[in-house]
Each structure stands twice: as C-alpha cells, then as structure tokens.
Image (cartoon, rainbow, N blue to C red; front, top):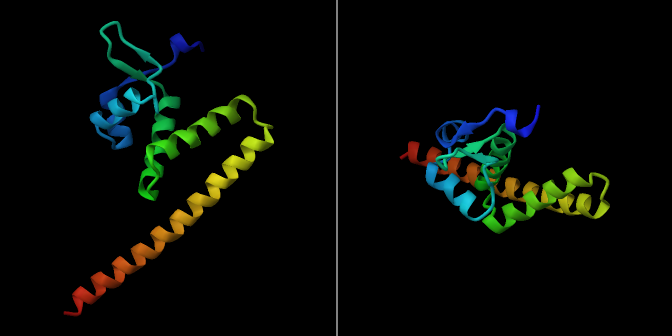
Length: 125
C-alpha cells in the first residue's frame, strides 16, 4: 500500500485515541515533534497509525517528567535506528535513555507509595 492509500484520521479521532488535547497535538506539530503525515486540501491535519504510535510514545513519557527536548532526543534516536538498526552508538544512546526511564519510574513508584501512605493517614484521622 502506498502512502497515498494509507488510512488517515483527522485530529479529532487522534485526540480521542491518545487522550491529548487539540492544542497539545497542534503544539507538537508547530514545534516539529510530531508532524501529521498529510493534510487535506483544506489544510486539516491527517494522521496515520505510525503518527498515532509516535504520539502515544510521547504521551507515555509525560508522566515520567520528560521535557520536550528530551522527547525529541528519544524520537531522533528511534528514527535513526529505524534507518540504521545496527548502529551501536545509537543502541548505546537508547540504552542510556532506557536506564534514565527506569530511574524516573522508580522515583514515581516511591512518590505513589508516599501518596498512598498519606491517604491512609487521612483515613485514620
């Protein structure tokens, strides 16, 4: 199937699937983080499944506190690996990002545990 025949969806459907706002998706487009694969003749953004997968990857980074620049760095590594999967330097960069994500997740887990303790204390009052 050529790109022209690929199934696309408008921004409204993408907001429903990703639970991100129109404003956020437009911002991602404006800063070049996620550019829709196409536009209608009227200028409406059209997204593919690959675009949605990229958006979901970004959405999953948000709770871990990644900045837009850090998100862009990861996406650059992912894109480069798609072009040259055997690149050892890129693999090492990805592993560094993965280790950082693990640390962030562990911190978030500790924070959730503290929040649970706080809620328990409130129940005891």
